[in-house]
Image: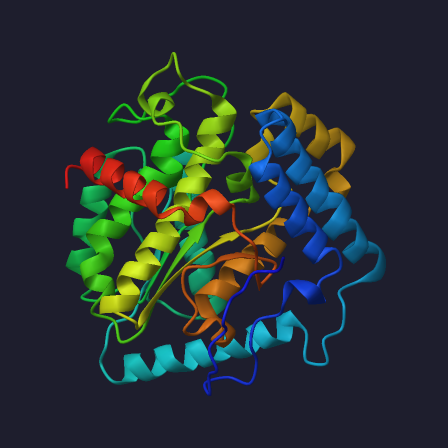
Length: 359
């Protein structure tokens, strides 16, 4: 089955998102992922590896050999460039009208990450010729630091038009707690972003139009439920299930928040994505995935810029206007893990999250 999503008709732009059918191997990849997510016979480690290998062999290799299918319209790069140009014009109009618009680059807790964030800001200023770019320190592994970040954002601006929850860690071998005692995978990948979004939501609601974009993963197919005991217990910790659970939680939260805001603030959309298996150091903690992605199939992984393209698409593309609550990959709406659409599990997650953050 292909996802039954009613794409809204919009006059703002001439295009709508591409379909899974238009991608070589797209439908088969979705079928494999959903099958793996619902199978009780396949161990979690093999599910994770199977999803990665499916992406490589069903999507990356065909695209590498034959290129992307032509759709009778400009390629995604040109369509995205048009949306970026339109966004830049809108920002310039806001600035000329006296409104304050800034780009916030958030980073992790290490000195190296902080220095990288500052360098990124300087590079953005040079390349965009926009001096209104600022760096604010953020450690998603500490609720206290998240609150400080939120207070600083409130001090510097009166509205947030776009929130990107992109930080993450993967497959941490042993239980490493956050400041509040949560497993760092679940704490940083999901719970920290949940708290941050909750604190910034009042500013987001003040925007004429706003988008919330979360980085999930195809790993959300890797489990059918969240192992809550392993989030705060080293004894119950499962490195694979905790990572997959953090990404399943992200997709669940995307669905829940989109539904909630659709009723009260339809001008705010919430979406999440899988950026793809990219050539980064994210696989370094797993000997199996590290072997596959460095010795075995590194050449078949995507460059980091390709993963960033999907993120940029959800942030700025006119094609996404009005679409909310979806899981995306390669600028297409994909089938979700059926567990992510379970209303009972969604509510259990929200209740747990609110309890953890003290709301």
